[in-house]
Amino acid sequence: MPASARIPSGGSTPPSPGCCFSLSTLLTRRAPIAVALARPGGRALPVAVARACGHQVAYLPGLAMRRIADLHPGAAKTDARDAYVIADAARTLPHTLRRVDVGDEALAELEILVGFDDDLAGEATRVSNRIRGLLTQIHPALERVLGPKVHHKAVLELLSRCGGPAGLRKAGRRKLLSIAAVHAPRMGKRLVEQIMTALDEQTVTVPGTQAAETILPRLADSLRDVLRQRDQVAKEVEGMLDAHPLAPVLTSMPGIGVRTAARILLEVGDGTAFATPGHLAAYAGLAPVTRRSGSSIRGEHPPRGGNKNLKRAFFLTAFAALADPVSKAYYDRKRAEGKRHNAALICLARRRCDVLFAMLRDKIPYQPRPAASIAT
Image 1 (cartoon, helix red, strand yellow):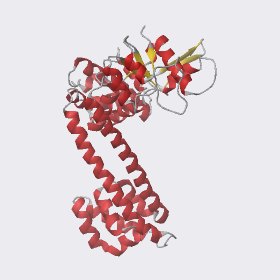
Image 2 (cartoon, one colour):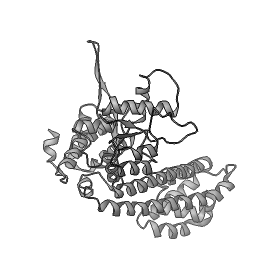
Image 3 (tube, rainbow, N blue to C red):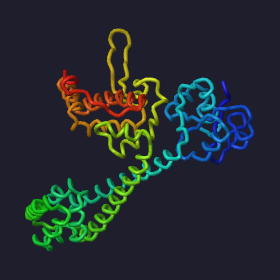
Image 4 (cartoon, rainbow, N blue to C red):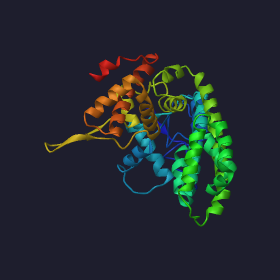
């Protein structure tokens, strides 16, 4: 069993020499060692240096680390103790470690783009919630019309050029139609009619409306800029994803788009780290957990652990795959068994996890089965 080491992540208190090796010590060692990290994110330089020296690199998930730490005496939380726990786990419990990606430069760049896209998605959610909150505060009827469509270009253009309810009423029907028709040729007229109807439902002016009239255009411009950046990043991710050999395999499966394919590729890789589909499902948090004690406690419950990003990607792809006849037939069968919507989607995601594992293992695209065979 090779010795285990952890590259220190910084801090005011340096780890003790007996717990871990420093980076310079790691470079001068001639014997092969295994480098165990507390977390893979933000460790590109140490990982690259360790691999350049021919050492194996893995990381210990945070929840597993805390559980293993309870097996050691003491309750202190220091860098030195954490380094000792990680090194001892790598030596005695190697199955708890997760492999860090093999160092593909394309995947490293893809991870940065996907992380930036996640930040933009969070910012878009925050700004859209702020817009809906302001509209709810000053004009609830208008929010019921514009809130669900706040990401639409026509709605953002109306808010940017006209502001809130007072500006929309002042602009008039004809100007609103001319603005909406540019970005929504088919729904523009209906949208304007709904706006005019909502404006007539409230005759009271709420305090703070004037300030909201000046803030709403800025928020609309900010949201439009964030959405434009997301579209640009999506094109860059798609171009980078097309160059990966596994991209055609992933995107051939119904419900998997550019963003979800990139997330699955980053979290799973080529799938060789998982021995069976069950291992992949357990890692994604899709495999049910069995509880049995004597003859009174018997059952299964949804798992609370797993890779949250991967689980979310599988859930979103399962929801998007309901347009596929095969997936819809399996979903309907689970609903007929009495399962709720989310539970049926989890079952579908678990089923698709098995299919995805086989696709990655054999490097072949998705091959649909007849929907009748799934339904029966």
